[in-house]
Length: 171
Image (cartoon, rainbow, N blue to C red; front, side, top):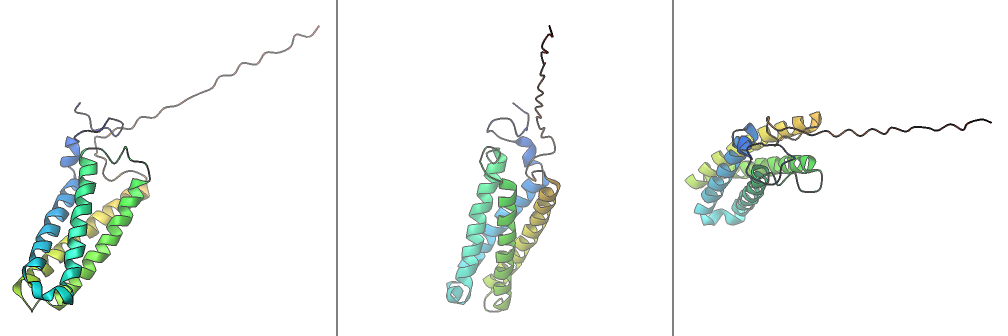
């Protein structure tokens, strides 16, 4: 089935792959893994903030990859819970954590060239997380799902009750 309706079963959502939220998540995933690799090159700064940067970038990578998969295969629509607000809280949290990691890197960027590269990639990832958080907030504010593609359709069921009253015949 080619339809990308949230009422369809679990399957590949091709329309999501061409959407802005998909591009943002792919960019976040790529920047997170690059920042993690750069933070892991010079092991001597682990006690001075490098471990924190590695933790934040890898946990953001794993969680963003899971959310991307949930949206790509329409799993998120089948999970119980308010996933719009859960995803928004996740992005607010990781936006702040990535900003703190970028500042930690910026303070020590002159120690080694890999820390300078980590600084660049964490600030770039922070920028993408800010944009994604803003879009998720706007989607939450308007009451729709940000991950839902523009071609997604919703099904509305209306039930009506018809009651007929019998009257007593008066004798």
